[in-house]
Amino acid sequence: GESVGLHLPTLSVQEGDNSIINCAYSNSASDYFIWYKQESGKGPQFIIDIRSNMDKRQGQRVTVLLNKTVKHLSLQIAATQPGDSAVYFCAENIGQAGTALIFGKGTTLSVSS
Amino acid sequence: DSGVTQTPKHLITATGQRVTLRCSPRSGDLSVYWYQQSLDQGLQFLIQYYNGEERAKGNILERFSAQQFPDLHSELNLSSLELGDSALYFCASSVSGRIQETQYFGPGTRLLVL
View 1 (tube, chains in turn yellow, red):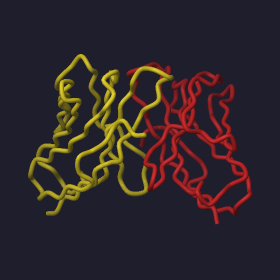
View 2 (tube, rainbow over the protein chains, first blue to last red):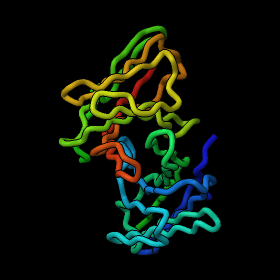
View 3 (cartoon, rainbow over the protein chains, first blue to last red):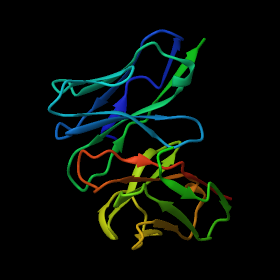
View 4 (cartoon, one colour):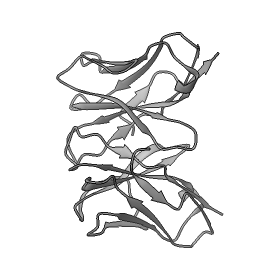
């Protein structure tokens, strides 16, 4: 079954708010995590990644936090914009059996203006 | 635009038929991955190739096969199609297929089996 999951299937925020999307993973051997954004009719788009030897990584308006103790990953989006509306997936790579990514089921982020 | 291209964008076919999906990786990328996205199963890894050789296999049915050609493009062949094969099929590519390497996804092929 899935080893990566998300806490909430949907999240609705107002434009300008900060958004937090959560993800729990079950495999303690996972050593690489990625967040993807998928807009309707498009393929997953890479947002940010983090390796297991890090707790936090920042990009442009996005921050990924990794808590290995509780096997939790989160994506924070600052000043959310309508263009951020999409489905967000976390994915993990356990570093075994090739380099396949294991995806969670996704959280749909809706941003209203 | 990720640089990964996939054709066709849409495909409608009947049960029992065979189709071929095509993928061209980003320039310079040697590794190609195929994923299936369905409403009930989410995004699932099917198979990975690196420089023409199969590297890893996931939940790929025996009716499905793939290959990567010398020019590094890849094809996914789906045969004896069933209604349940209707899904989005994505190709992704990465530089060398190593662990902790970003995979970039193409726009996908939407397959509808009637």
